Image 1 (cartoon, helix red, strand yellow):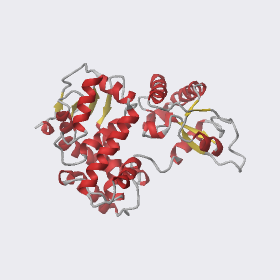
Image 2: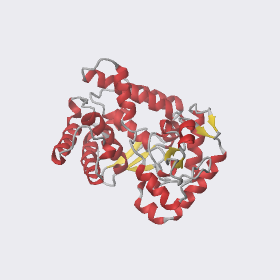
Image 3: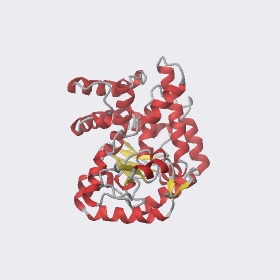
Image 4: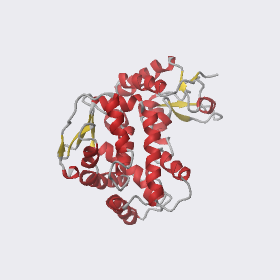
Amino acid sequence: MSHKLRVGELQALYLTEEQIWRTFTTILTTRSKKSATYKYGLLKAMIENLYQVDDKAVVTYDQLAYSFAKIYWNLVIHHGLEQGKSGSAVVNRLIEIQQEEGIPKDITFDKLDATIQVKATTRIKAVMKTNVFGALYGDTQGSFYAFDHKEETFQFNRAVLTFMRKYQLLMIDLVNYHMAKMIEKLNDVPHINYLLEKVESIAKRSTLKPFERVLLLYFDNRCFYCGKSLNNGQTKTHVDHFIPWSFVQSDQLWNLVLTCSHCNTSKNDKLPVRDYLSLVVERNEVLLAHQNIVTQNQHLMNYKEAKMVHLYDYSIQNGYENIWLPG
């Protein structure tokens, strides 16, 4: 009964890629005996926080619960999709908040007031302690991560962390596909493609305006790529994911830059030429120098230059080989 554990210690410090693949194959298929989508939700939350770990490969429960709450708010409240009988605790907590606050169903998680997001994160964290952390820990025989309910910390096995970064795009596609397959069985929907579209979009933020305001506080309103001024009243300011969102799967201040519409559109889902990597690293050093941002904006938490470089290299390994240069 691993889901009842309050502490789970790592049972294997060293794993080969073959061993990790074998375990992933088990937990992503019916050989894992879970009847709800929790395991996929946790895997998606883990992927979203791969570059938010500290030097000990640790993330907090709050970080994972925020991602988990966002995923299920958008699936359950926004899209009205059933998550299985054993998923009722998450569903009930979110419906309670929706009713308490009188929130329309068309409101996605990122548009909720920050206090409501915190409320959802706190309540979902309690559910994860009971039903999620221990369950997936059991499915992996304790080899993928350690956890501690009292300290509220989650520690990746470093071999698994490296593996998930190396094969991140494939992990995203596999988790989304199998999550959609399970939701298809739990809901009366016509095609899996319909659900894949929903599952693939649930992590994406609909507006990056809050990040734009922070960046404008410390940098000139110029395009990061071509240098064009964005203050002339004719050129609209855009915010771009330096490493494409389709790979990162999260919105982090250290990966966002101000751009003109032309560069943002032409770059699309491509990786910038490597020359810009040193520029974004230098830009992030400026952000880190402003300690008030670091303390007030959690999106800079645990940022390191080495992570940015690894993320760039891992994205190339994951197939982002169509390198973009501004025209």
